[in-house]
Image 1 (cartoon, chains in turn red, brown, purple, orange):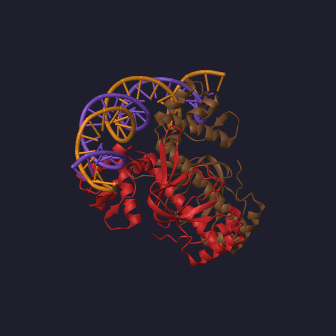
Image 2 (image 1 turned 45 degrees about the vertical axis):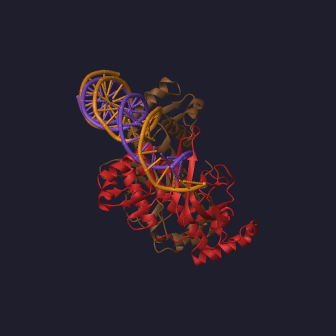
Image 3 (image 1 turned 90 degrees about the vertical axis):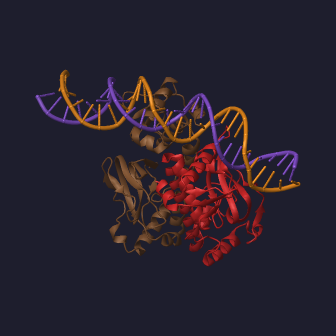
Length: 225
Length: 225
DNA sequence: CGTTGAGTTGAGCCGTCTCAATCCCGGTGG
DNA sequence: CCACCGGGATTGAGACGGCTCAACTCAACG
């Protein structure tokens, strides 16, 4: 979590304010008014005009893309503090929905040019968070292209544990179906693999279905490749 | 190819010059002196200090990551004009090698902060090309996570045709093994799928093994999903 | 409690992988 | 110009990981 987020950084705050003041849409974007989204509610949809980007205040957001026949790939889960929905062009290339209840602030965007040309601090933050998204996407490419179901699940669990940093008890806010579509698997394979991990005593699956206890992180880590 | 590359853009040139002038390493980075790499030669390696990023002048470069047991995922192929090797941290997270002979210019990097804080034009170009990499990575996530071998190959062929823009004859500079490691398949599956596409008269595989003729782009497009 | 939909488990199938044999382009030397 | 090689490319046969379809369980909620 060495994440310096755009909004938190004091210099960036000033920069954003400056940027917004210059933007014609500035009036529409009062700061600090995070909108609350219901579970499953759409934040934006593939193809929507990308007039803003977003920051997760609380809860989790998924960005995903649908193939014509309904196959879905979840690009990423965004946790509190994460930025998502930035675009090079003027349309969103993915859809975004709340996973469980979530609060999200919209940041009206000027053009990329304005962003980059504005105060260094903002440009730096935007660039850094774009690069972080890229890093995550690249790691995920390796997972999707070359890892087995077991390796995918192990990687995912450790990653979630690290990001939500709640000790060894991971609260998974998303459904099995979300996990499957993120890891390029089916629901059934996700279940079976979790069960198998429990059998191997790497994790524990309590009755509460969205909670997983990591029992043997070292073992899990060896499984991620 | 609506690619405005860092180096070509006149304003960016000035900005880079400015940036480099400020950088202690500036002397080491005479502009326009692209180094030539042999086929397969390593440009940088996973873990190397990331003191520079790169632009492909001619030829093709692959960036890839290796798992302990030898499984490989090729993140992307970079064609003439493409930028690669930019990092948020100070180490390269992937390896880069020339695919066939390639010429590459190194651009000594200052810190991200300097980059972003410098002339708007550079910041804008760096941000834009990072976002283009991100877009490509995201599209590739969908391919790796949810597409069949046939859909992967069809997508790949159309993408290469579009990027190298040589009409219907695609010169593939990379080996079957490279293609396989890019698409999350094996060499054999790549071969079989190409053969099947030829049987369906979507493509033609001439005797020259690194050339593929696209015979029915509409059909291919329908196959990409 | 009764209902409901997510989650789990089972059985069989299929797409892709593995292992192995063969092909043939592209280069070399005669 | 031709014969010969080496290594990438292709093809085949069988194995297997993950998928599909279907039944069942059970936590959550009214």
